[in-house]
Amino acid sequence: MRRYGKHTDEDDIRSRPNRKGNRPRTNIRPKHEDAAEGLVLTVDRGRLTCLVDGSPIIAMKARELGRKAAVVGDRVALVGDLSGKKDTLARIVRIEERTSVLRRTADDDDPYERVVVANADQLAIVTALADPEPRPRLIDRCLVAAYDGGLEPLLVMTKSDLAPPDKLLELYGDLDIPYVVTSRAELDDGAAADRVREHLDGKVTAFVGHSGVGKTTLVNALVPEDRRRVTGHVNAVTGRGRHTTTSALALPLAGGDGWVVDTPGVRSFGLAHIDPSRVIHAFPDLKPGTEGCPRACSHDEPDCALDPWVAEGHADPARLYSLRRLLATRERKEGD
Image (cartoon, rainbow, N blue to C red; front, top):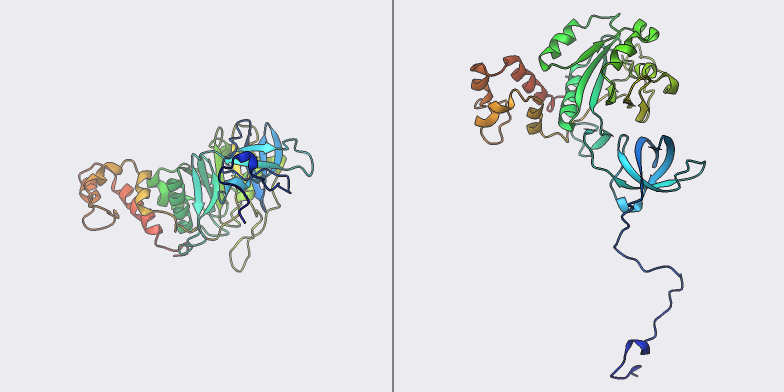
């Protein structure tokens, strides 16, 4: 039986009421133009601590962001309860464009890319000169990740009272990397922190290093009013340190205008996400010589144009050697 006649209008049609009383779904998302600006300080099990107008706010990612995740150092837009009171929760509705990204994978066969920190200006690579022994291959990998992510590297050598830094300085001298050498005694009296701080003022610096090298001890000296977890020890049998930092945390630099990001100790630094062709951008003095290279040149093959270009005196041969060493790092394990 036909319910309506041939000539019906909208007034004749009965609509089924919405029993839930909610509005129909829409694809139009709010712009959140009045959202507050914040800085992500740390992430813990889906909860993010953000600094908003000088106060810490606990927030979670809004559903509208999808799979996009915020990390330490991200500049974000927040809405909701921004009071910072206990049991309150704000929402992160937007992640601003990043100026730099430090990424790593678990190993070179792992396709899953992990963002360690965003918007950092430099990467402080902390290595002990002894106990545990330096791992140049791990340092090389950190350098590649820094250059690829747009961070300037800083080499911090600790425990100089146990071994001299000469050998390591000779290895990295041609890369023109700024460095600081410290001893255990200088960490105790604050002299080491003062020298490192000269390189940190006005910058966001991420600290990375093998477990047991004294990274968190140094961070504690740089931000004494907000000390991190107790420092660990080095196993006498394996030569490995114990992880004392379990999550990345951004801390304001004491007595200066800058931020320190302490990251968990690493035992490997995978570079599966790194395109070797981008490493050349860290060598602006060599880049003009690549104009004559064949297409998709790896810069480490017989017909690479860099060889005759450097031989003609356009650049230091040591720089070409350093470039190729870093490129080869992509194919080597840290312990090699």
